[in-house]
Each structure stands twice: as structure tokens, then as C-alpha cells.
Length: 122
Length: 91
Length: 81
Length: 146
Image (cartoon, rainbow over all chains, first blue to last red; front, side):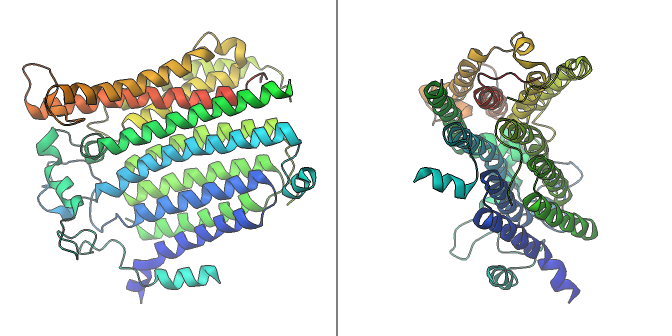
């Protein structure tokens, strides 16, 4: 039972974070709140990829002469780390694009609330 | 309910941190080789660099990294173009 | 991996995410978002992904915080929900 | 819009702290082969050191460090360094971005790949720094903080 819990609690908390992000996107009216929800959802996906790359009793993927590289159980898997490293940097660039669109909307309609925005659009 | 379905699905995933997982195996179930172990074994021998993440980022998957760099460059140009146009209309 | 430490960090992560979405003042939400990023970087380092943790600590806490603050200062600070 | 009063203590702290962050950023880029680090992290640190002066000092002080029109050419230089490395390797008879074909005499293929990774990381760092500063500059255009 404890073994089952230790093997799966990381996945459960990742699912909870993802649901918080989806809730923020769907049910919040302010556009900045929606952007915060988007960031939380993105980071939760990154967390899932990092957590499946982990091994018990393994060191970080920097070569150490004390641990031979022939036994692959000594080191973590470096491939998901690399993919998520680029995903975070691209994420902040696309977040900048989202902020740009927010500023453009505010310059034209003087509001960021969703319902007021729909009223002004009609 | 959405969370319940996802948690039930996540309970069927393999145990976290087990070195015998399918992801860390030598061969996948379709018969092809998994590249993660190849990176661990050959990174220092190929490039004399101890940090494996740097080797995978800069050497083995360098065309991927070039694509990422073009993407962030495009994002910077989008901010330049969009904000310049809206500010000029307002003024 | 030390699983007790990770469990505590996970609980604080969920708490800070909920507070960042529910608070009315947007500047407080931005500060809670920065705390969320720092805890996430700590969790990445605890899992052994030091490069990802470094990137998250620099970008998620530094640059994203500055951009959020600029947007909040240029628009309104109050939120209706 | 919301103009804050200018605080000399904050400006002094930022001016003290900024060069050390910049030196640490270059250290992270150059030393990325042996410790955690690399182009993306170092570029973000350089951008943090530039943005610190811009937040603390406003446009009048920030104009002395890196001017606003200089960020787009820096980003272009970063992308071109990366692309030219691949093109030179392809012109010398290898594949695209195959560093063991770079024309540097007197080096073994493994050390050539080591050097190639170092060159492209400098390119990545320059591009990331310039683009993050460029996003900030475009967002505060026309208004002065601090």
C-alpha cells in the first residue's frame, strides 16, 4: 500500500495542478487571471515530464568518475530534461506575446473584464 | 469529475522512479532502440563534455534547438509589430 | 529523491496556486505566482533536474515577474473575481 | 501612467548588483560544459541584469547601458552565429551542424565538437538576452517608470 502511494503520488498532485490551471482558464473573468491559469497549466505539464525521468538511487546527469557510465541506472535520463529546458524558454516568449495582446486590447477598449469587453464589442 | 477521471487514469501508470521501466529500457516494445541510454553511455566519449544535458541540447538535437531559437526570435518580432501599430493609432 | 520533502513542497504548490487564482488584488496574485515558480524550481532540483531548476528559478521568478508587474501597472489593478 | 518617485537608494543597489549578475551570466555560459548551465540560463541572467537597471533607473539611465534600437541587431547576430556554424560545417563537407567538420586545424574530432557546442551557446545566449529585453522595451514604450 505504501509502495503504491510512493509510486503514484507525484502523478496525483500533477493532475491536481493541471485541474487548477484549467479551472483558472475556464471560470475566471479577468484576462490576467486567465493568463496566470495558462502559466500554471504549462508548468504542470513540465513537472510531469520531469517526474517520469527520475530513478531511485541515481545521480544528476553530470558525469562523475566515481560512477561508471556503462551502468545506466546510475544516471537520470537526460532527454526529457533537455526537451523541458527549451519548453520553458519558449513558454516565456509566448507569454510575452500574450501580454502584448493584452496591452493592445486594453489600449483600444479600456477594460480587461470579459463581460464588459463583450458589451463594448456589440 | 474531470479530476476524478484523470486521477483514476494516473493510477495505472508505472511506478515512478523504477529503473526497470519501459522508458529506461534498451529496446521499446516495437523493437526500436531507446535513445536515452545511448546518450548516457556515449556522451563523454563523443564530445569530452561531462554535462549530458548540454551535449544532448547542443550536439545530438542541435537542429531542434535551432528551431526553438527561431521561434523566440519570431515572438520578439511579433511584440515589436503589434505594439507599434496600436500605439500609433491611439496617438 | 527524498519523498517527505517532495510531499510538503507539493502541498504548498497547490495552496499557492489556489491563492494566486482566488485573490482580488492582482499584485498579490503576481507575488503568489512568483512564489509558485520558486517552489517549482526547488521541486525540480529535489528531483535531480538541476538544469531545469536553474532555468525555472531565473526565468519564472525573475523575467516573468517583471513582465507581469509591467502589465498590472499599465492596466487596472483590481479584479472583479 | 502611475509615476513613482525616484529613489536613489534603489538605484544605487541596482547599480552595485548589476555587473556581478552580468559576470555570473557569462560564467554560466562559458562553464556550461562542466556544471549546470548553458546558453538559455546564461542569456536569461544577462537579461535580468539589464532589466534590473531599466526597472530601477528609467529610460534616462538605461540609455547609457544598452540603447533601445540595439536589441534587434543583437538578436539577429545571435541567430546568425548559430546558423553560420551549421553552414560552415556543411560547406566543409559534413552534414548541417556537424561540428567535427569545422575548419579549425590541429584538433581531434571530439575536441572540435566541444568547441562547436561552445560557439553555438554564445549565440543562444546573445539571442535570448536581446529578445527578453526587446519584449520589455516594447511593452513600456512611451511611458517612463521610476
